[in-house]
Length: 324
Image 1 (cartoon, one colour):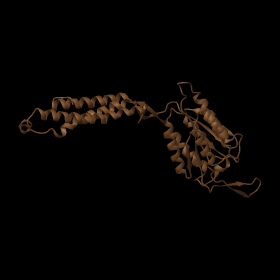
Image 2: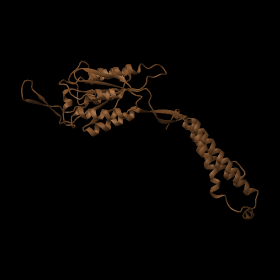
Image 3: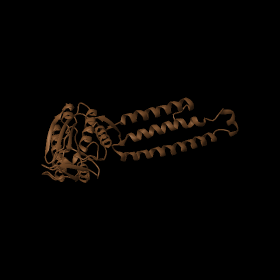
């Protein structure tokens, strides 16, 4: 919970002042009573002291006063509500290094398995698009409500090419932006986000990572990235016209993926196992499906304050025939 005008909480200083005033009034009341009565007769006039009952109305008054004064600062509750009209673009690296088997059965297969679960868990009212990239990006499925189309289009084979990370991210951002349109004053566009999974740095393509970051920031589309793989990744490639196989080390290199996420207000994850990949997509799905909104609850605080004050007044009137 937060306050729209926290500076007005200074009004709460009235509460300790009210306590001090009550103590002063109690002492004055005792002094006046002693001046007009005989102490020797008090035992015959009072059957019992009020004890704890004397403090109950005071506590209720103070709680009510605290709520009332805090209400001046306009309290706001942060609520989790479902998003409406969101579009999610899945960007998947299909370059040759995604065939490494350090993540079983392969990096690409592990990503596909996690994406499959992610799509099954995503609400049907969300549009989804699929972009794959190696040296060049390809829009496999434009934004659609038919999640089965995306499931059927998930890549199963890698391409013997490099990774154009920036081109893939920029294309995914552009697809997301066109799907939700531009924001207008007082009418922001529906949520749009890109989830990009890759295993390393850019080694191909036309754009630089800084270009993709600038475009995502301009279009207000966050890019969350997943660095998939371990430092021990290896791919094997059969030489054309030969029975020999080349071995290439393809260690996961998350630096540019981390920078891409941080530069676009997205989230960065590092997953070295298939189980970790699934957990990442589950977390991201939950974040995309809901958003946090602030809602003013001043009226509820005012009603609570009134209830406590009235309760204190009623008890004080019943027990002591006075309001305070």
